[in-house]
Picture 1 (cartoon, rainbow, N blue to C red):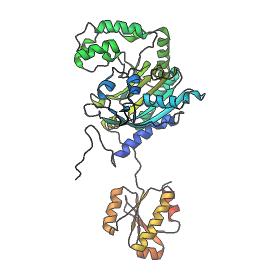
Picture 2 (cartoon, rainbow, N blue to C red):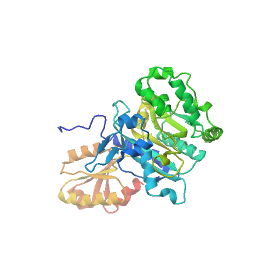
Picture 3 (cartoon, one colour):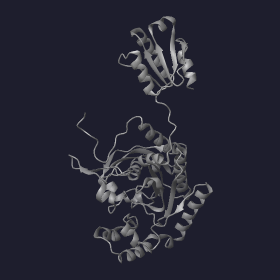
Picture 4 (tube, rainbow, N blue to C red):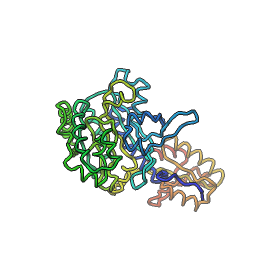
Length: 420
């Protein structure tokens, strides 16, 4: 027994359940790969200032949840708490926006880290798949990303999720709303930390999940009543494009999400079967983020979907993914000469694309057949000394129990055809 355990708030992915996580990642990324998004991978840690500027110094992520540390060389770094700032930094550093093909469309998959109180659906280490469309201001891009996420979830068999949609306005209309909201919030009975947010980013108060705060927010000014004509028209087109695509959504006037960089379109995917941690993903438009981190004006939009919470949502709905068996053929040799010959056959089967495993460790026939059964293989391929002399192997169907001799010559082609 090991004396070490995974750190609190983290988890290990192990077979066979890890196959579900891989399937979810593949399902989320598949529509992106089919829509012009290229893969990007960034370091697991970045300069602290990248997140302080981009995510927002007033956010819980930066003030309470970020894992920050100082290197031996004196650099201040942080484990990445989210993906957008890192991906935009990478695109700017590589000058992807100067290559004449905007928007730059990127997708990514990786682990992220936040120091939070662990509970079901909330971890200190979690996995996301994300997508960013950088460098274009177009309602069709916002709609495209929401549609692709909806497509991904539905391809997995998820049905009981909802899409919440709102507009946060832009630099033209948000200041007037900010002032109206600040006036309203200053009249409430709020704790000192929340009062500080009123001056830094009052929208974050609307995102407060505490019941006593939400009760006081009834009657708060709504952003929709302060949107400028351009933002109103932009949001209307996003809604029309989603409706035309048959993607259902709900208008949520209080939806602001927890990051400072969002402008105009903001959205969230929620699943009511997950309790308090109901958000399975979300995103929005962040037209000013590039300038916040030292880049040129690059209006952009993106989202991140939680792999962990998507798996929990599938379990809540009782959805069983149709996962391919990790092993198609399990090879069982009896005797040393048969072992050498059958190992060569296994190598050929793998090269032909047939998932094949082998009874390692000199197991006896009984133990080897138990291993074949546990592997989930469709067939067991048994080769003994007598079979070898006759130039055949015994092919056993693990479901029906039927067994037939198959000539060693042409065996790879015959089995390959059964798995084609």
